[in-house]
Length: 134
Image 1 (tube, rainbow, N blue to C red):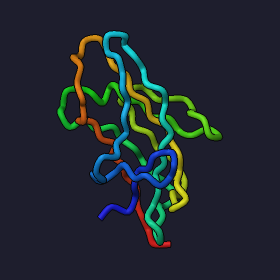
Image 2: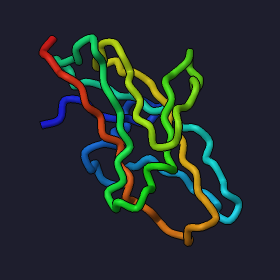
Image 3: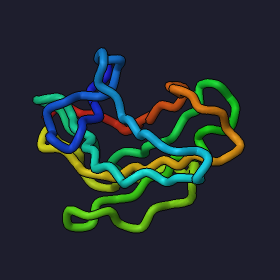
């Protein structure tokens, strides 16, 4: 059972654990090497749980093993705006306790002109942390 989940910026729409039609979606024009507008997300612990002070690490995982993780980038939240994005494909560590109130972070994706038009669903965000009862 997962005790940490990812939510859209509304804080109520869960996009983790295969929750149906909800997904982190970018519509990009590859012929223009387009980069998507950064999207604010939240990691939240289930009610009654929290992470340890070490926080969580978010990793970009390409399930097709074709290097698509290199087209996604993550950033911490900086007072409601995207902080400095890491390199494309790099993991992000959010230190501190993650509670049910949620901890925000940002994600963006890019397309490159060497890829065909597609509806690519091969990339996941993997969230890891140590969870404890409150």
